[in-house]
Length: 196
Image 1 (cartoon, one colour):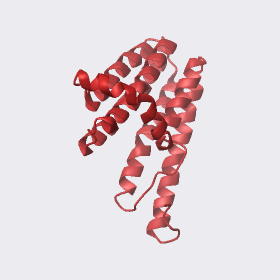
Image 2 (image 1 turned 135 degrees about the vertical axis):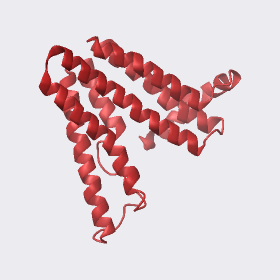
Image 3 (image 1 turned 90 degrees about the vertical axis):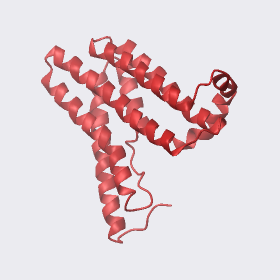
Image 4 (image 1 turned 90 degrees about the horizontal axis):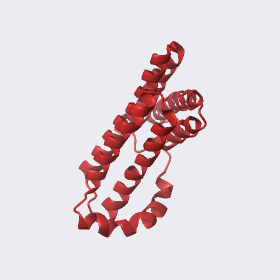
């Protein structure tokens, strides 16, 4: 996702003056995105999955724009980065919790369990990185980052097969956590050199 930053900044740079004119700060966009995600999660929970996931996809724009606005307006702060990351965890949690509720209303206990396990994995991926990076310089390995998880969930939800997306999220999330555990252990034991 970081490789896309230059393209994202160039694309949304023209919006900078508009947001500054109305005194809209990056953190405001982060909050707006989280609130809209709540609406999307509501529709998912009541079974209108396509409408819900479309709203969720739309909220990703806020997640993208807030970073671009922060760089344009020179409002890059440590708190802003922290706040954005915390809201990311809440929004992803909302969506998976909504799916869990939806499957619960259908009486599908297996999918409720799978969704909960997916949620645990999704929230543990960034924690594994954050905790590892207290001991080593960098631990961003693995394919199960947030963008991959969101794309998997959105794509299969739009195809009316959200269960496939949720199962994929479960697999790639826990696999990535395992990769990060193994990688961190090897680095700390001096078995491998850290990635640059």
